Length: 269
Image (cartoon, rainbow, N blue to C red):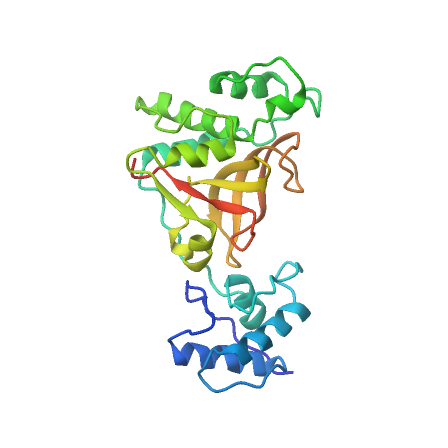
């Protein structure tokens, strides 16, 4: 089987109807090198969609995880075809608030619930209290991932002597909904971020939607060469749980994850 040379992802989703024939031919050449075909040269048509789906079914990403079988060439399928090239340069936040909040969040890595599984503890109680969440009731009423994010921005705003524009809520999906009313805030859907990784910036808040009103949130630190997000998250664990026991730095979130509702960018607010 032929080998392919790592090359940078073009920062947009390559799919049926792609207008850049040279780009399509490059993908077709890589697919042929892996033993897949046939194609009409330079044309991303239904036949090529079918071939790409077969490739996705039979291959994995750089971390050994299954590819999404959708017949489209996103960052992870690209990486499986070409190898992982140098990362796209990700701009720093233009807002001191976002950068400071990221630093505050990172300073909490290793904080754990006391006792584990209680959604309580000296620092966890502080995250919840600042966000207005009562410390009474069952652990299920004290999910604190979004409270941790709010607390980080609150601490950053106090340090900088600026208003905290982040909505005061412990609800992940409530945060997503209310953020659209904050002047200057940009909401980026998961699909938009997957299509153009240059939209992703450190200090953005990511929101996952698990359905039935359940969600998860954290703060983006950076993007790895293969497109995975490095994040700082509370109420999680090393497996990326939405109901874990501490604050962790994770490298598990993928822009192709269908659970990723989007990113909230406060850098211009």
